[in-house]
Image 1 (cartoon, rainbow, N blue to C red):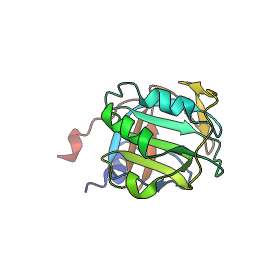
Image 2 (image 1 turned 90 degrees about the vertical axis):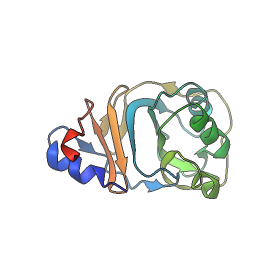
Image 3 (image 1 turned 60 degrees about the vertical axis):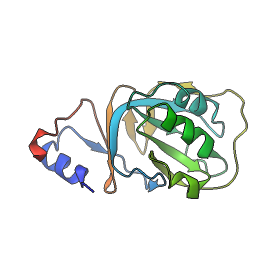
Length: 164
């Protein structure tokens, strides 16, 4: 597997910002990148489900769940929907469930941890708004790059031609 982030930071040090939170990998895809779509919610994954049910076209959903460990914002059913709809990955400032199943999916899933309890569906939250993750502002339309070294964002799409 390619260690993408070290090479990107070597080549584009001023164009990348590392997300400082301690995310753990849960999905079967550990290397992915794409345009950012955001959701801001708290212990209600209605908007996560809504967004991932739409065509992703290789995008990555970044969710600010406030870091809550009381409810899982993603499980196997919504992750399956994300895969079926062409999403590259989901990054959650919060928790997931169905961790064993998620590891078998060809989907990037990074979160703070796993816990078994689902959310209530109250249709609360916001889609495509700027979010703050560990004092880093993440905006819709940015690019995110993920591998086992971390998660980085950029205002623009970066060219990988130098990797050849």
